[in-house]
Length: 451
Image (cartoon, rainbow, N blue to C red; front, side, top):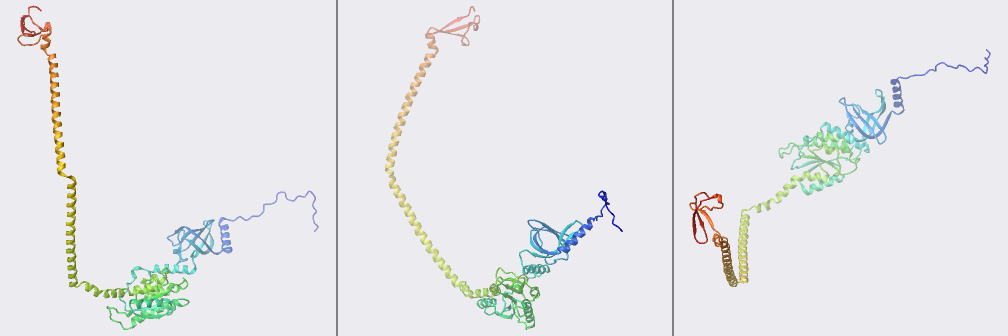
């Protein structure tokens, strides 16, 4: 078939049919993203800080893992990371292992956590924390199950290496504080592969030995060993790891004999320390704890004769007599001192009396009294004279103001002859009233005739 020719005016379809396109639902798109994440990313290790921790009643734990630049939603389902779930806490720095996926209901990508480690802590420390949490939950560390140590142990079991420094320290302290203490040594490795199993077997062996041996009847005890000491010297976490194994912890827990754990130095703590009945900071400290009762009693007995001698009645009597002598001496000393003090006081008073010169003092006072009396007499005379002059002046003024002086100047005083009332105004007089008029010399009787 021949090819059709096209003209220059043939432009094809101006309005082509609608192109075919694929439209996804939200669920389809989310499912594709989920599959892509799980295939391309999948299992990862990621570190960060925990925040917004939320534990549901279902047992699932939800939280956010964040750093300075981003955050990631995480979920730890109930059956995942059973022994390390307790490490989850707000603000905790952790390293998580899990699967990256998408929670399709919310369209949110998240990490499904499988393992949990503390950030910056190695695998041994994580294993230590896991076992510690597990055994604590089972009650192996419970304080109420801790048994007291016998005060006067006579035979103990010792679990340690026969060539280590710990056994030398223990024997040195025991020899110094309680040489009669019997020690049953079960040697074992305390470091390396298989050491934990040997330690656990040594503890079990001592328990079997104590039960199988013929009991020594002392203090109504039915066992042959009073306690077991599990010990070794210091070292790194790897060196001490045998005492962090579960097999050792359970052997200590199941022991019928009280156990003292002394592993490492003061700053070292092992699982064995938590399970044991008593934890000692060092092997030497453990030996001192075990021998404390006998050592203290030995010192008590050593001091008993001295204390008995001190308590003897003759000694007490002698002490009382000596005390009496001391009191008598003190009394005499105080008496003499008191007499001397009184003599000094008398001498001081006599000196002061001489300095005062009472005769001269009295003479001075007599002279002063005479002068004072003379002054009082002069003052009295002057006062009397002043009073006399004042009286004369007053008398003179009264005389000048008296009625006699007025009458002497030609005045008269008219009075009612019957009553003696002074007539001051003419209208005060009445018709035919008898009047009496007083002049300088004598009186004049008159009668009112005209008003």
